[in-house]
Amino acid sequence: MNINSTKQNTYDAIVVGTGISGGWAIKELCEKGLKVLALERGRDVKHGEYPTANLNPWEVPHNDQVPEEELEKHYHVQNRTGYTVKQTTKHWWVKDDENPYTEVKRFDWVRGYHVGGRSLLWGRQSYRWSEMDFEANAKDGIAIDWPIRYKDLEPWYDYVETFAGISGQAEGLPQLPDGKFLPPMAFNCMEEHFKSKVEAEFPDRRITIGRTAILTQKHNGRGPCQYRNRCIRGCPFGAYFSSQSATLPAAMKTGNMTLRPHSIVNSVIYDDQKGKATGVRVIDAETGEMEEFYAKIIFLNASTLGSTFVMMNSISDRFPNGLGNDSGELGHNLMDHHFLVGASGSFDGLEDKYYAVRRANGIYIPRFRNISDQRDDYIRGFGYQGGGSRGGMEADGSQDGFGADWKEDMAKVGPWGMRLTGFGECLPYHENHVVLDNDKKDKWGQPTFKIDCEFKENEMKMRKDMADSAVEMLEAAGLRDVKAYDRGGAPGLGIHEMGTARMGKDPKTAVLNEFNQVHGAPNVFVTDGAAMTSSACQNPSLTYMALTARACDHAVKELNKQNI
Picture 1 (cartoon, rainbow, N blue to C red):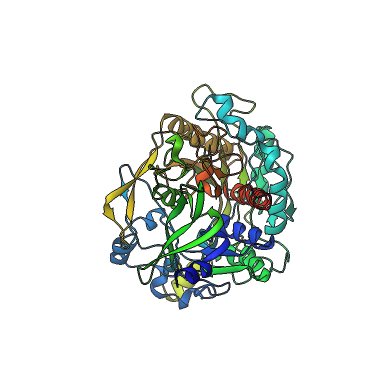
Picture 2 (picture 1 turned 90 degrees about the vertical axis):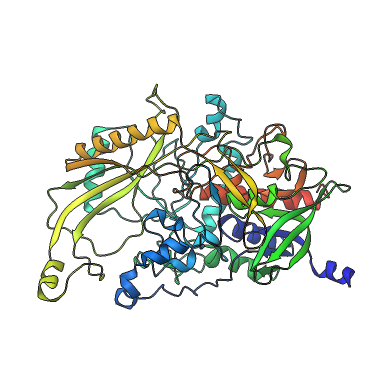
């Protein structure tokens, strides 16, 4: 019976997690002919099964608001964003009372546990990293050097962009390499005015449309964007890239994927005699029973902290402090982009113009600091996301009032305005870390995390420049009542967690090698945000995709050579 059970539970590869990077790992390995077990801790969600995607405003209870007592009980962390937990979206987010962790310092851990993970929820902004990003640590003497450079990822950026579908405009900037773009979305007239004025005043600053994983034309069997701006509810047209709309269907076509939801990976099984991992231990989320699954290669794509948890919880004689933790760096160097700082203002003019669609995208201003103009108060840099809009005439049911007065107010149109929000790089600090708390268990009896992470002096000095530079650009474009803002916030709120199992050439200082293999356990790969050695200032998901596709190619080649 045990022999039959082991045989039934054995695959060529196991992928833990079905989000952006996990979906890519599943697709690539299946298409290369491997029998793949895809493990997801949450429930199954099939493409198109998005319960609120087509609801009109008057069909949504409580004007889309969640009662305060429900927010406080279940979503006190998830709702720190101020916009994520609504009646139309609350089913996507974890319940914080069921998924506890300890904040030594405030850390907003925003999560979604279901098939597709946060690929159903992400902001879809998709930017390549540049050569200067991969060189930055070595140049500045910060942390350790990346083991790869832009040239190593460039063909893989091409590869994933071609499949995923990224709309955008080529700009020819060294700090933001161009990609394989679908036609870009259009500026509105406020943004066009802003672009012309700012680029004339500041020649080193470029205003471009956001590079986004939303289709502007039919692509790979998926439909184009309908400009509804309901993306966070799930897109039944498949217009934005998600595991459901893109990578999992491709994997399914091969016949090589076995998808197992409600499967919480507790740890990796490491065989000391064989000198490699042989499988994973899985808790059935519904029954609580433990089961083991086996494979030749294992990809951890459970999210930055999810993958690190699995590794830290994987104890063996060879790795008493967690799988691959010879360096002592596992759990350290936690990063997130800092944002919620910028400026906004109003504009007198363009009163005869408006817009007709809800574009789920904005403008982007690539990094310009510490490129040609070197600061002496902080290192690295930031970019801006934002856009122009006009108040009024938003008949979506969210305005207060009723009757004739309400109808009259609805017909009023306010002035144009412009808002800029900076996204800044966070340095990799060893002391920003997570540890397992064996005194505080989750509902399945597993240890939880203690998270000790903060932004430091370099980030704080950068934030002031982020606000000041936003003000000067808005004023240069002729906006009035320009006001800077800084809502503060803590790490985690950017939902761009990175680090804790960093890549590096030396196993004495890094957890992973240049192909995302665990030093000391080369048949285990980690290709989500945990692998990042620095954070740059661009949204990181496109880089996760490229790293994953590259690692899968290497893994299968090494497997065929019987090197792993």
